Length: 553
Image (cartoon, rainbow, N blue to C red; front, top):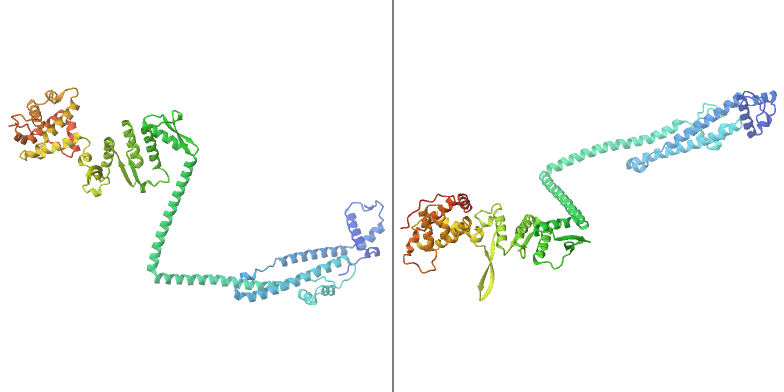
């Protein structure tokens, strides 16, 4: 392409000057007044302006703009070419690597040729922009910059290439190479889709065949898996519980102020006073009395502190009470009698959940509390001893080979079945009065008068305090005179067997023992009906109305 103008010789030989003046002329043309030079402030002649306008004609400006647009298009194409990056060959199946490698190499070759051609074309345009008034052999310069093969690859032979006016990049060549790569990638995708489908189909068939052939094993494994999962869940819960216990234990080790306060409350309730207290000192406790270090503790106080500490340890997070055996040996030794119930209450509350509990004691009152507790347990009343949850034993002192020794034996029924001697006497005499006939052997009645006398003395001692002697209390009884005289005579006559019998003492009269005892129980019922019914229920007998008093004969 050749620009039609009247070039100035001084500008043709100096490109930088030409560009500078051309830019200045454009500035002057856009302003209102062009008669004065903006650089030197001298007056511009009309002839000079006309010469410059003829040099920088409209064809010149169009050429410069066309060259700038072409360079921008070249840069855009170069950017698009750079974006064409095929995936890494390592992501493809092995049987596609050959075609993919060939297509990738062809694409890379086309990209390299295109970039080489674009660089040569850009250089050619820059040259033309600097030499707008001179003809430029575009093809020769392009062939020299790259090669004839590359030039033929991207130019159309039907156009005039002499000025490079219609030279362009043939995108069809690059698209063909890119489509070859895309074809391989599409084959990869199809194979992946079909492979996944075929693989799933084959897996389903194998699974169904395996299940059909091993259905029993499958069920067994499922059951084992369920058991294993359950065990895993249980172990997980147990681990969580252990972790929680550890956390609580660590917290208790760090802050034991609260346990000290609890011990103080329990010790005060146990002893009945708050003189002794536990105070926190570093990682332990100190015992004080009225705010001062406790000295010369009594045996009872030592026992109380040791017992309370022992009971407190049963609730420790490291002690598994439901799986442990607890032995408590005489916890009320050296304690005041008023501490008995406190000791029993604390012991029962803290040890009731133990897997097995042994309670040893010498104190009968404490034994009675433990016995009552054990008797209230479910199934304790069963006849089969092996099915009872609680058992009672005692130590018996015996002589063996001339030596005194202790033997563990079953507790005497008198101690286990009856709370007091009064209960025992009531039970045995009630049995003779209402279940034994008068015609029984006299030997079986021989000790009953003494038992009856002790029973009435205990009963009247409570019912009629302040009176002296059995006879004095009997005379004051508000009951039938014949009945009370008969019972009193029987008691006086036959209860003092250690004495020399009176001449009228007739052992055969003992045959009337059941009848006299019925009168005795009739007197008790008449004086205290509720007490009588309660005693009958306690010994497991229904109250019966005593028959009318019989003569002594």
